[in-house]
Length: 217
Image (cartoon, rainbow, N blue to C red; front, side, top):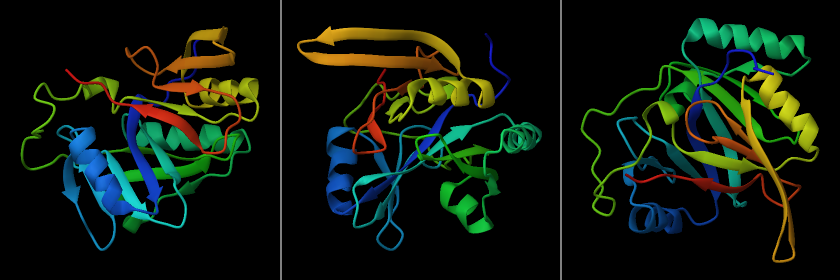
């Protein structure tokens, strides 16, 4: 069944890291991203015309701090907030400080059924200068498809699928159930745009996400 109108793409990823300097090397020298900001122990990266796509904060933990999903405008953001509240999801508005940190005009905050912190935002700010990567000459495929995709932890796959589809507007792409060289794979793939999936739901794991993907030209 087609879900309600909702998010359009994966907009940003927040990361907690014990070693921010290692993330800077990884982001620039391995992924080919560009450093956008380095404010007081934090770090953020660009991969296109958005002011930032990934931001890293110093922490005692190594995990994702938040996943940010984009939506069309403030009216759609307000409609989504009402839909979440009607489903008894605890929702709060992002503060002015948080919006400035994310480089967006407005956002709401809540958690998915597995406890992963989510934000939905509108009005992403653009950078003043073109993005260039010394490593990825072809650039990254983003635009309407967003940052890429992410595979998140799901304590209950059916519950998470219903949450993301019925409330946030994702649609089912497909599901893979297979024995891969002794590893029992059971993954649901969901899309919000023309990318095959912006979100996949895996089994329970130690961290909030299994991996994220960025696509080069």
